[in-house]
Length: 637
Image (cartoon, helix red, strand yellow):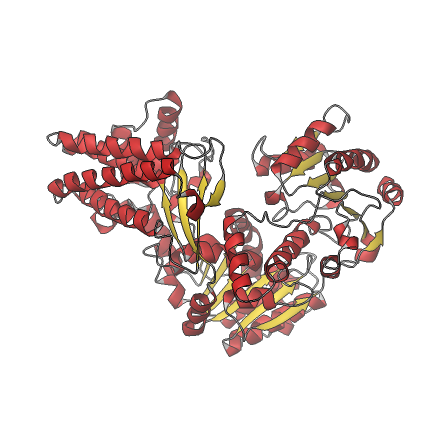
């Protein structure tokens, strides 16, 4: 007989028996009941579960009890692994030990044997680092069962070799691949199709949903229950995948693949090598007409520049030349046929991202050190996504610790086209009044005042001395973070750890190990970071995290909002900033035994009317404007 959610979460229920120290909280049980009802009624539920609710168990248990096919999607690969390897086995052991589960990542995370062999015969680069990394991959390839590059720790995460030993939708040969029998992507997807519960991430989910990723498409229609954790990230990620992207990296990789195929099988067609080199040169030259430092901006504006127009003309010409040459060798090899298809697709994308007169889209670009990407992003995905949800006949659960604004969900549900969704807010079980002190310092300079950065550094110095380190300093920009870092350096004996000096994972490990360190970070440290206990007692935030108004997608959404006769500041900027701030604040108290101080150095919280929306959206902490009180409090922790 199927047990009820109530029994499962009771003090002598299945979870309590299987998990040492498990005690259900009322908010967790409320969420589990809401999830169970949503699954039963095939509806949609948006639930904000405060930190400490135990939302993972609250959605996994009722979904498993129903015995249906489940997809759980998380915000990042790190959270995906944590859920799959830490939380899921506990619930599975308690409720359904024989349930089949699978972890599925995007194809760029799996080794492609065909591309490793092909690029091993004729390496695209002859520098020592590339060749060394390639041989490490080759050695590992004979040991791995899964082909998941996450297992390969002997090369850097961003090694140049990775795009040449993995496949993309563009360059995969599919059923024509000579190594299809040993394909790691195919095997991972077979395991997922066979599983009762699959853990994916948002990027993979929406790549599939927009039909850009082949082979995984069979999974989503077959799922009965779809659960999004960290759901606050979905509107932006979904919009990205419903748009179009053209990347110079894809063109560069195509040219390298054509040159490799020329070397191995098509030496009689000298024009082929020449045409590929010509396109490679012109696409790399186009990167040079952008600023040297990585940037993003409005493509509609940028494209008006003469040097951009000339670079585009040369790329068009190179595309046409390579197209004419490739057409002559079509059918000679499977690989060259695949290259011809890729060229046609990239040529089409280049035209589409330059059709800048279409309305309803944001046209923007971003650059890295060597490459550029052109994007078209729809301003609204509500119609498309809402229709997809409606037609799916599945139950949908969206949950996050930060999805409401001023206790309302309209911002989220209207972006995703979910007007009928059930909503629920569950408070955190933490006693914020006892555990935390919140300060907006009195007489602090306004954020646009030049004195604000120095004032922040000086106050931070006093605070971190009082807390003996154990502090996160969170910033809305790299520039201010670097300036404050320089001001603190040499003025404190406490170890300073700054984002960008090493990987996020290593920085956090170091921070926890040192026990009295100060970590300076920007947006990636505002969420998905879990430091419990005495290692963290102070979170300082430099200012309210309003996205830069020249952020292209935000700019376009604001213009669109204005055209509809609405106030873009109220409708677009404030909700986005409230959710970001709630994420940053959520770093401080992670457990019932944690305590600490939150200091937000932005007087607008109390001097502007909209500050009230932010204040009402934050946990109910004791409040003060007296920094001396905060220092006294910190010395007692």
